Length: 113
Length: 110
Image (cartoon, rainbow over all chains, first blue to last red; front, top):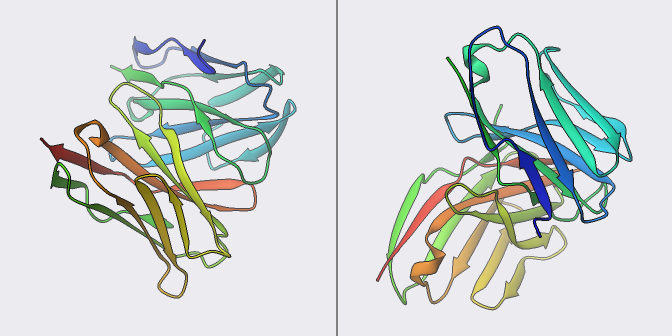
């Protein structure tokens, strides 16, 4: 059983479209994250939720909107996709908001044409 | 502004030898450091960590060293095995955020 699962794993879409990436964790963790790995392989945090509450919101365009219906799910919705949004998006969870290791999903590769 | 840096994008080591991966950071507030291993088409997986109150942590073939004065940490893998070939990310934590380096691709040659 996959601890942190993301869907879809691959997504190819046109500029201007709206798309969502879903994430679910079955570890019972309270905290979930979205990370973006760009073409330079730089893994950067976008959002963090703790018990469905937004904790971290880095400088991310407001076209990106995370939604956490419950603490086991954190979905990422992206409006009006741009070429620069092409990246691999990783969902992660951790047992505590502070310290501890992150458990990552397999990543979702988004390609915007 | 990149607070965690891995200046070597790649490293090749013979099987059985030691692999040393390096990481530098700039923020003196970081108090927890981690190494992650990533295979292609998979998410990073936790490998080993160290708190800032220590200067060494060992787990089997993996040892992490922390030099706070130099703001430098390193991961030693001894002996290196072909299955260790992967991308290794170091990460540092301050408060509730993790900052990652850009990774070092390790190739262990049989």
